[in-house]
Image (tube, rainbow, N blue to C red; front, side, top):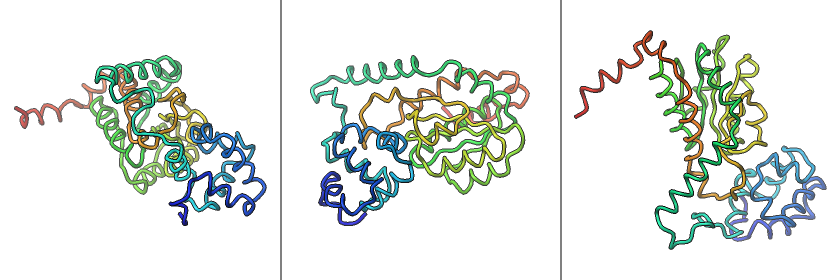
Length: 278
């Protein structure tokens, strides 16, 4: 980013408004008029609000001196005074109220998530020849957890935090393989690349994401939403994956494959590892 550290996003937009292209000025005007709505939008949503393409939004951010939309969004969030804690939780709130809010949010996700898509996902998982799991950044531990659980169910899969590895695995995929991805924002470049490659290879794709209108959502055959999208964007909270984990665990609880567990001795590692536990 250029010398924008001292300036707010809104001031930067005002200063450079006359220097950017007309299509980009439409984005600038929308953000200036609707900063609260803009900060809650992903790339595709902001493009839709401004009546421009996704690529125009990216170019607009770069012309302002930001690496991309996510960096602009984080800085705008800071400018608007968002805090790490939820606005609905005061410092005096008890621990129980925090857990109650989490429980309430998870219940809401259970109500909005498509039962049909969950059942279809289970069908795809249990019938797949091999499952390719993909996630990047701080979402990677979730995909490793998912892979571990699936293998304990006797379901063959591969998972790696490095894009070079999972892209290579997908490129070598065979008929009836499946791609399962997790992307909270739905805009991860490497995940989009993995999904596009999977499409070319004829693979079905399941995606867990918090945004219905995002590149990842558009590419998914089965979309499992981990958010009702009513929560305001908070750049600190993007590091929390409680809701994605809830969706994953719910899905895993629906995946019953006892025949494969017995057939492949998938529980044998646990028996071996039991010797190392007190």
